[in-house]
Image (cartoon, rainbow, N blue to C red; front, side, top):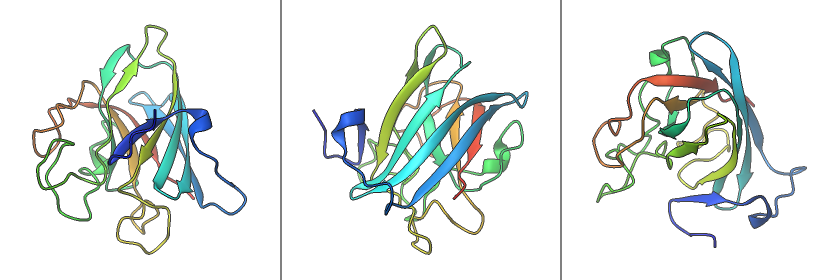
Length: 170
């Protein structure tokens, strides 16, 4: 079942995308020690950007997952800035007036530390020059936090420290 909300977790077969004509981007996740802990492929689809995650070596359990406003990932990843929020909304998927474009569902990492899934973010685009584009002059980053997002506390959902970061690159 595909939910037509601001966010949807998508199955591989849920979207038919012609990658030859679609805008794409990529990102490589590093942990605080600089080790690679996964990658993301980003594809522009009709409803937003489909983010295909392949993660490894992460602590098991729930983790917040956000787009951050600066394409810089120096440990402890505060260089990535705050959440990507071009429309100046409040944080959290439960915000009554709308949420940050960078707010996304929590990740649930299994005991193996490996996770593959796809997340659709309908609040962003890969179209260069658009106000909600992930391909900005200062860049953007994908960040995984130590704990879950409570989906309501502003500005960051009480998601804890930043444990992995990936700069979005064309």
